[in-house]
Length: 381
Image 1 (cartoon, helix red, strand yellow):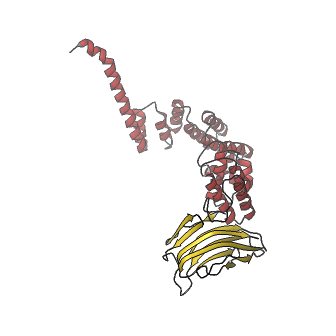
Image 2: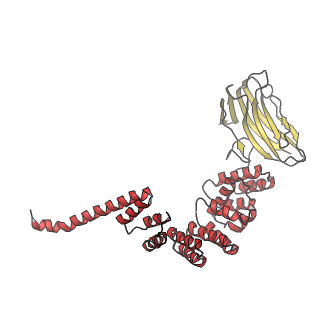
């Protein structure tokens, strides 16, 4: 053996062995840490004593030395807010409110993300310090976070009115504005139009979809003025297009046209308009296209349309309006004769209506089969 070469390579071999041993310790500690029980976590600490995570995990099991474990986790990684917040909560539980507040503020100093700020706001709410709570709640809402449901729920304890909550809490930033719309939809609430207009000002993934969901919620809550205001703002911002003479949806819900997928019916766009082919295998009663209308009460309206049928057999294709009160108006059977419109009048309480092209098999008749061509349809006072 060449002694000189062996001695030259010895430091490299030692470094490699040390690296292998370190990797083994890291892998062992990671495997033990995933088990999560006290004995495994203490073994993980022995295998990797300079890693903060296992000290923090063990402290969360509420062992007798939890306070010391948290202190060691913070010493090893003073820039992770998790152990700091846990230490503050432990101090608060023992009555050390002033020290708990200091540690929470320290957590925000080292980590200016959502979690420390939410923790501080929660602390001030528990202490009954409302002014400080709202200050930190707004700071929490300012930072980017995918889901801040817990923050909004916390705030609604003090301010259940979502319109006032929106104005008080939600900053004029894209993520916060759209997170608030997600929240009201998740909780089945009606989105304030001011919140919708704030969201309209900021581009965001799925912005149009989120806003249309907000309009749906406003309609469901019968806040028709809010829905009209939000939809008008969406039109002004060109997020959607005004429903024209053809049922061509941008979104397919809210105040837009809908073209439902129907078994036994096939819809396509042709140069003359929208063509719907009925195979005769569709359900006995089905909407082929539809749209929600916001209307004025006690007002006469006319549905003007150009709808043609070819190769039709069976019966039951017609335009129909169903008012909020339940009153219905419709054309004659389009499978029998072409028609160009019909009129209706809203009642004193009617603000909402559904305009539908339906295929409804009359009793004793066969289902409609053939092609329906919608060239145009308009609703006019």
